Length: 422
Image (cartoon, rainbow, N blue to C red; front, side):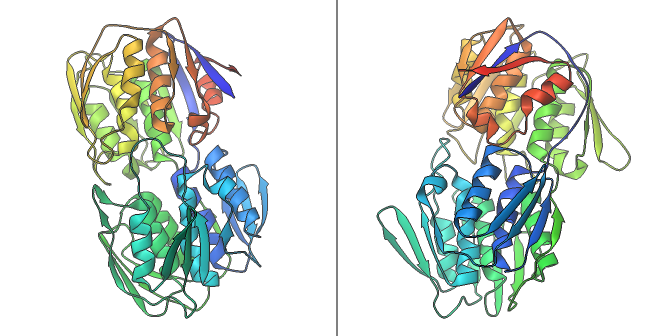
C-alpha cells in the first residue's frame, strides 16, 4: 500500500496527455463478451479498475492480452459466473451482467463493492433485465439471472431517485442488442461514456439510435462481430487537471481532450475568474489562474450538467478562492467526506446535508489526510498542491482506481510529489 507526499506551494507548468476514459473502458471491455470473435480496444487506462475488469474477463474464460494501452479480448468460450473475489472489489463489475445474459442466457454475479459514497443500489439493473424477460433470484449474496428462451425487447424506464443511471443504461443496452425485437430505453443516461459504448456496439453490428439522448431505441440482432475501437478521453481526469492548472498553474496544457465533454467544468472555471483556452479542434486546452478569482455556486446534475465526479475537486479550489462558494450534490448527497480532511488543512467548510458552504481562506497548511473515495482523493491532492509544507495522503489505492499514473503526470508538470510505501 502506497501513500503520496505532496510538497505544496509550488507551481505547475507544461503539457501532459489525458488518458482514455476509465468510465467508458469498463462497459466497453465487458461488451467484448457479446461476440465470440476477438476485439481490440485502444487507450484503455492503466488503473486498478480496468485491471480488475480484465481479471474478471479472464475468469469468465476470455483470452486477454494487454500491451501498454491496447487490450485484445477473445471470448470464444465464456462461463456465466463472475467470481466473488474480483466482483467485490469494483462496483462497475455489475456491467458484465447484460453481456452474459445476452450471450449465454444466464449470469451469476455477486453483489458488487468498491464504493463508499452512499447507497448505489443495483435495483435498476435488475429492473432492466426483468423488463427484457429475465428471471432473477438472490442466494447467499449472489444475483442469479436466467433467460432460457432468450431476451425479448421491451420499453423500460431507467430513471432512478437521483436521475438516470449510467451503468444501468449501459447494462440494458448491452443486453438489448441481442434481444428479440425492439427495446426502448426511456430516461436513459446521456453521458459521453454511454455514447462511446453505443458507438462500440454499432461497430459490432448492433442497431442503436438515440444514444446521447434520453430515449434510446435498439433493434435486436442475432449476432455481433469483433471490432477495433479507441476509447474517448477521460473528461474527469481532464477536469481534475484543469482545476490543478487554475489553482497552482503557470500555464498548464492538456492534450487529447474533447471540448464538448468539458463544457460544464469550463463554464465554472471561467465563472470563477480563470482563463481556459481550447485549440480550434477542441482537442487541446490551456489553463491559467485568473488575476481576480472569485467564488461561485455549483449544483451537480446528470450530463450535460455539472458532474458529481468533479464537485470534490472544485471544492478544493474554492477552499482558497476569495469569497463564499456553495457546492450542492443532488446525485450523491453523502459525497462530502473530503471536506473533513480539508478542514484538517485549514479549509473553512461547513457541510449540511448534500451541500457544502466554502469560505475561501488565504492559505492551507500541510497535514496527514486520508482518502475515502476516488474523487475525494483527487481533491486532497489538489488541496495539497496549494498547502504550505508536505501533505501526506494515505490510502492512495483510491486514486489509483481511476487516475493513470497521477504522480508521474504531476511530475511532468513540475509538481513536487513522491509515491512512497505507507
